[in-house]
Length: 552
Ligand SMILES: [Zn+2]
Image (cartoon, rainbow, N blue to C red; front, side, top):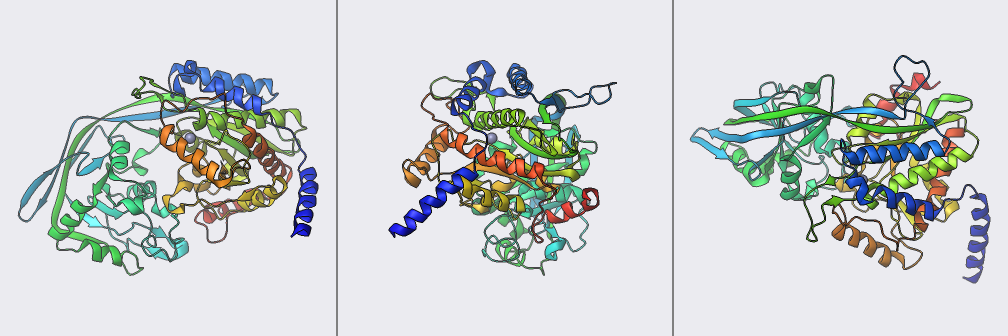
């Protein structure tokens, strides 16, 4: 036993030397978080005075770190760029009442917005949604996954019809199968269901809410769908959004199935198999009528760059969202400013400290882009915009390392990423972590689909190897007990609340420690000739392989 310990500590000493690199300063991290989450920055809401202050502060710091502007090209000037990328966002709000009703052979029944259904403001460009007696077609999990030989649609025509679909993926209930068991694949996310039905020309998507496979209750569905919606400004919005996008309470859905001559639970079981075929509910139709107010606001991504010494057109990205919730409803103390110190002042501080370290070191072979994205809190929109209109080609972007809501506490023995991912970039991070005495702890709740809920995801979806790094919970000081307690206390008392404020008691030593590892991961990738990829059975492998010719 003693021998093992001795060897382990010798190894640790040797490895600690191997890990020598730039030092990251906890005081600097603390200072950046303090400034960015101060009341003066008004909770960093997009398109507010808080945005201007935030964007200016980030530019100032990137400049001081010796980086180059990496944003939109300056009009009329060759090879000159600004520090930002304009991000036009559509803002959509339902105006007036939402009239909803269902009709069956016996008669019609009014439904209530927010209680029976949660209908979002249309984002397809329509000013009015007016659906009269549209048939309802149950499409199971609504999955088209050629790599898994799975197709729930079997050629059904959804034009003029509303698709009723289950949340999560076909093997969630059994925990075993071709969709990662309990873990959620992208096919399980509501965003996927909306996109897929829009692609198929459906009149709308109605997702059946069930708490376990959704991983949240009806209150969350109601709150996040019935208020103001945002989307990036798309060239063809109707290709991404069907006219109607909604959720329905499970029991109401089961009742409609019954009225249409079907058994919800039996069909749900069938939907867990490849043999499932879409089923139209007999004589049951739905009508919907509501007006939508839409206009465009403009926000900004901030982009700073270290230009690669020998392969400047190949890029490694570090990213973090700069926005938070701005000024909103007051809490019990009357505080209305949602400061967002942890979410995501910490990620921004990390991004700035990494930029400072890169600024001091010789430029690596590939370029490194430091990207502070907007509107994460409105649905990953700044990162979605960048991924749709990339400043540097995604085909030659080697990897994305995103940081969101890091722990400002002391050093941990472990780290994590958002969700689960079969990607070599994660394998490289896990290997690297040993030099920092860090072990990888997988997401304990992969069924919640956290992989699809952070800013690396718009990149991953398009095939770019991308992960969101997350702080550990096994504190060197106090172990898992202290770590889990700190996490729970944050989630309960501060997460998305005005009390997410900077504290003088935060040591920032954990972040300073882990940044060495993230620096080294990005640096290796920026010096490498390699292109990490997804595992052959990962749902994003196909998208990456499609651009392989551009990486020769
Ligand atoms: Zn965040």
